[in-house]
Amino acid sequence: MVHLSRPTGTYVELSARQLYFGPKHVYALARRWQRYVAAAEEAGACLGEAAFLQVCYEDLMAAPEQELRRICAFLGKEFSAGMLTQYHEDDAFHWERRNARTCDSPFFPAIPASGARR
Image (tube, rainbow, N blue to C red; front, side, top):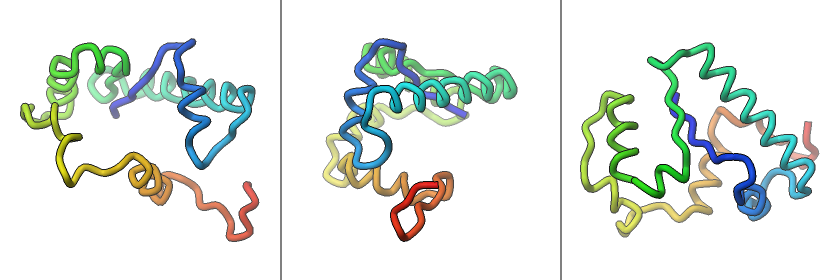
């Protein structure tokens, strides 16, 4: 499992407000963020270093090649320099489409047709 994290006090709340799903109030965002961080910490403790890698977003942005090499080594995959420029490709997904695809994945519970949340 690779967990991408951001330290407390970053602009996570602002970026989360821009998503078309999920809570928008700062309190609800903070509580959800707190639950996610706790779940990730628990997963890391249970899985151990051999199966859990924590990657700090700021480290990834500051040293992308170094961090991607670390991620690839963890996953047992070969690093390719093309990974550093993939987002420039014509076939790269726009973030809104990627978010929509993520919400359709089986890891997210379906929202009832009425639109009411569980």
